[in-house]
Image 1: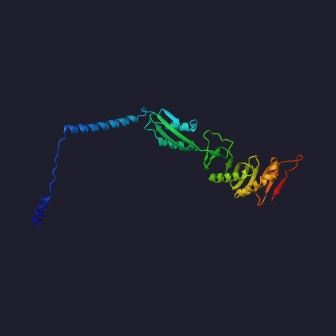
Image 2: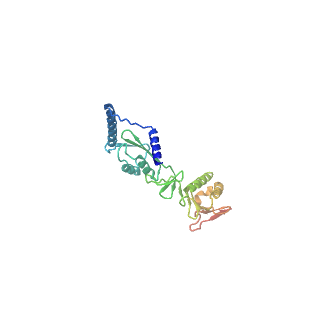
Image 3: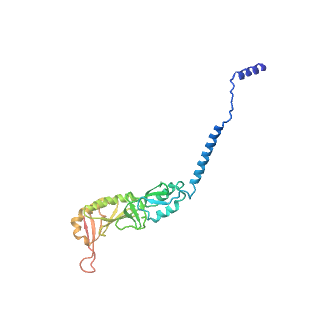
Length: 266
């Protein structure tokens, strides 16, 4: 029985087609083609290695597309990040470093053949001062000016951390309401108790209190032209923390030593 199975297995093996491999010696033309490919690859590797050397195709010029080249912050980053040559310089690292500056809204870097970097830096446009030494952009971003100077031409805003956009939005509405009475707002502050404090363009402080300030500011704008504008130079402060009225503190008038007169309109 075992002999029969062995014989049947041999018949199956003999029935399978045999694959024949033919080896052919390379001709001299084949060897030339192989050597040519190897030579090209070696030249390519050597060329790449040569181009990666720092003294080859060095960055000789840095061109700024917008006027921020005088910024010490930008110059410091460029001096530190511009290493390597035209091909090996890390443009993404340079862009990330520039974008980390608080006053930079966006930064992009590109190569210009054969030895130049072109840098575009867009700075935030300030619309207000934030506290003492910072600025506020139109979208509520707090930043330090790149030249270190905070202009007095902007209104002063300040409030709790994380509420810059809310405060800027409220300021715009308050300023628009005051403009109807020919008034301006030079400062708007919300303290930690969420109470609002306003400073008019003439330097008159206005206490608004907590809650939405718009209704109380509208009340001031409605009575100011007729009731207060004729005596604007004598106004010391205004208090809007009343349900249906306001209080005005006047500067000293009359005899020296006389107390300030207060009046309330309801």
